[in-house]
Image 1 (cartoon, rainbow, N blue to C red):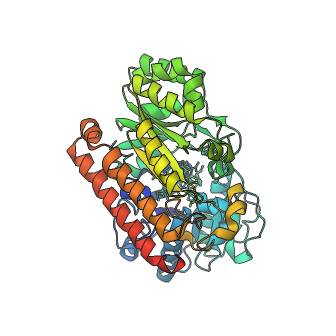
Image 2: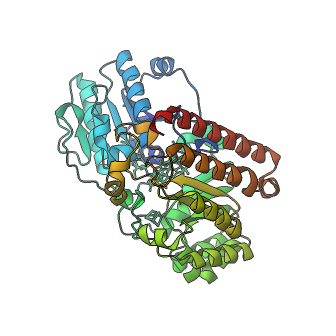
Image 3: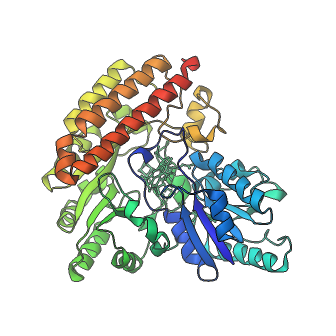
Length: 465
Ligand code: B12
Ligand code: SF4
């Protein structure tokens, strides 16, 4: 069967990091890797390629369409599904991805046929074989209720669906060959993504990762990872595990492999403060084998906030790790969360702290209490928009009414902090030295567009102030 898998275009209003970069659609590549065993599959990445979708569908004539979705994509997905149905109402539309997993109800729409809320190899084959059979018999598919992870929209989506972890599926990166030169991670372009484990046992109250991937780390066999590294053509790889520095033993195995096979690549990864402290020797060795930047989730400058988020590191640990990484020639990129209970003094203290920490790049997001997370209950009565206002749930938007100042004043503080960080602290000299002028220009332009989106959001929300 001819299957078209689509990543929707960037939503017009959402405040996202997409202003700076976007990466390969790893989930769709994983689905492709399974389905191409039995079907003819194509990926259309609408973040990378602008197409007239009606014309494209007429030319490609898919017999089934699969669309991947994050929360911010819901409206785009529904719109795409309606276009598919307008062209040929018999083409089944299947939605998968994070949003299908965490809020499948978002896709209870006549234009959607199936929602895959848990993705496994067996489920993918089960569903698409049933669809292929129905297409060849020109009949409706009736026998999907026993397929694991599949919800048939016409039968209604039950209220209390248990969130279940997806199977680790090896992505087929050749599926996006025509787009690969566009995928980047901050200044690293082209850059591939790699996942070596799932889950996180830290279970921070504001984070979806442990809900999506499980509250316990599940590591993939290193041989599976080595095979992928051998195949990746890009000079840079971003490892997307919650904390790739977690196991000294695995770091050593990776370094041995890179040494043995004489592979020279740049590696970026997420890493925790505690892992750097525990595995100093191995992290330092990894730096010699290509580790160039660690994205550290510092989250706050305030000890009581760190405890409330269930972060195990202290403010002092944060400073020590920033120093160690710098000493080893590894950039410490920082991510922080703006808490809705900050007052003007907190914002000032935060800007002071970040100057002391001196991260080469910082990403800042307002606390977002996504439905289903412990933080949601805590802030439910202070939400500024509805749960179904999907595009707003970008993790870049201010979603909780501030308690210590007006919304307008809070927006101004967020803007000022973003301005300082993006244009003064994410220092231009560093960006030019590391990546060259073009990248500086690309990231600065992204910073401007992000500012404009904040200003537009501020304007839209003016009546809430
Ligand atoms: C790496 C990552 C990024 C990277 C790379 C993303 C990219 N490809 O461009 C960067 C940093 C660029 C990024 C950006 C953003 N991200 Co992000 N990201 C992640 C992270 C850590 C891993 C995602 C991943 O690749 N997982 C591995 C793949 C294999 O899993 P998967 O996509 O879920 O796919 C599986 C199934 O869902 C299924 N599947 C996927 N698609 C389909 C389609 C069909 C038809 C079917 C049947 C099945 C299926 O197949 C796979 C099988 O295992 C997740 C957290 C997490 N652990 O999930 C957050 C996460 C997905 N991101 C999130 C968000 C909000 C964003 C941003 C909007 C943030 C912002 N403000 O800018 C942007 C939007 C980017 C965009 N539209 O592409 C949220 C999504 C919340 C939600 N409910 O949707 C998450 C969960 C993190 C969080 N904050 O909680 N992100
Ligand atoms: S913020 Fe990081 S440490 Fe906390 S649960 Fe999420 S992935 Fe784990």
